[in-house]
Length: 167
Image (cartoon, rainbow, N blue to C red; front, side, top):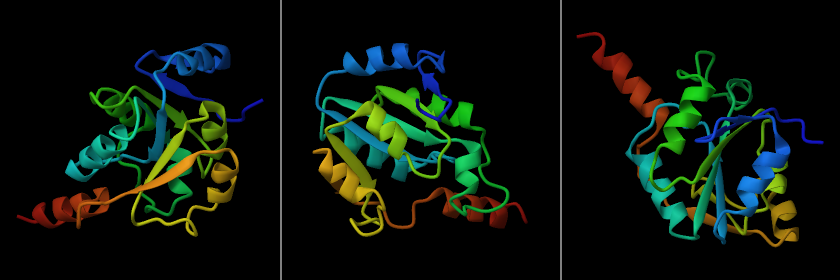
């Protein structure tokens, strides 16, 4: 049994693994899976998700819960937006077919449940920094790295907001 309580958007299924599996089975293949916090949505996120979607027919996005975001050392005051809102915003994007919240530090349990054909991460990662890359390869999941837009991150947006708030 999976440990991760989840919410699925846009269907608002909560903790019903059978319904979730049925949705996933019916997604057009190949399925691309990616994950992230997606706290303050910016152009870097949009371009990253667009490029991920181009690699397959369906895009499933794992969104870190508030608890798992804290495990990623994003800062004591992060995330800014609660996970339900972040997942719903991600699901509203035309390139995203499904967003699912996960509570662990890594999305490995969720990836094993979804069983995508392709997994994407930004090119700030590599096979050595994805601790579960060998597991993904053993399942036949291709790992693709998407180029990121320089200096576009939620952290940079927040720094700019803090700086500009002094005016």
